[in-house]
Length: 138
Image 1 (tube, helix red, strand yellow):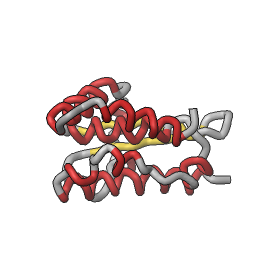
Image 2 (cartoon, one colour):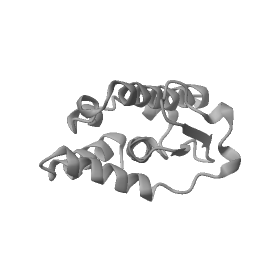
Image 3 (spheres, helix red, strand yellow):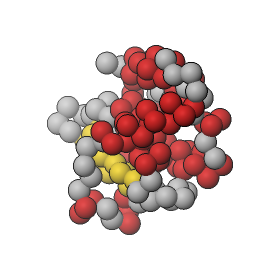
């Protein structure tokens, strides 16, 4: 699936919920489904600056030129937000990631329903993902 198809799928998934309590529950559920992040990857260089809670993101380029992301957080909502981001960008090329607008964040109302500190953390996570894409762009 393309990045935009994945974003549209998330928008559709969140459209069924009437209130933000249900949306937060779904975000927490997605965080719980995030694959385990190895403790040996919880290094200072993988820690995201600008997040109130601890967030780690690691990435590598696979043999097909796609970026494979891993991540974790010590906060359940943040871990769910990270899971949403990684669901969209994982296993895509650096160019695809750099060329995309992550519109699902606004479309599901996420940005407007986060506290200022969580909103800053979201931006820091997006920035780090883009930095990985820049670093791996050949």
